[in-house]
Amino acid sequence: AKRALVAGTLGTLVGTVAVDAALLIGRAAGVSAAAAAARAPDYGASAISVGAAGALARDTRPVLAAVIALATLNGLLLNHTIADWEHLCAFVAGFALPPP
Image (cartoon, rainbow, N blue to C red; front, side, top):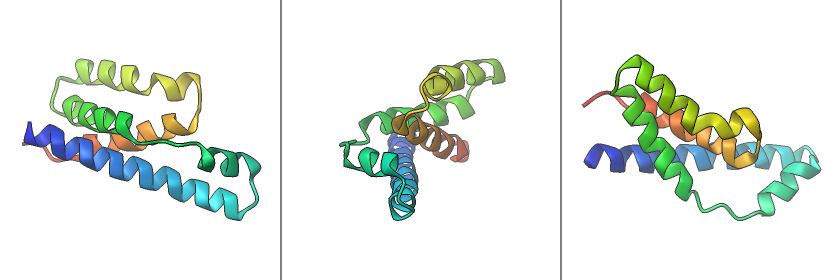
């Protein structure tokens, strides 16, 4: 439970900071889509689950890890929205945690 809490917290922090930094750079460069996306509220709750899923994927067998990764990141593969990029960053952050 503690590892899931750490992974979820790390996932939401890394995902949110990475996406917000990209949006800030986009806004500074005058990209209108970045400005519009920056105004949309995102509370990062889904990044908590995705960070924990990344840690779970690391701790399982490779085939199951691939299934978890594809299930978690299917939005990025299909939609390419800002939230999906946040999920990618959160998943990688959770996956990067060393095993217990």
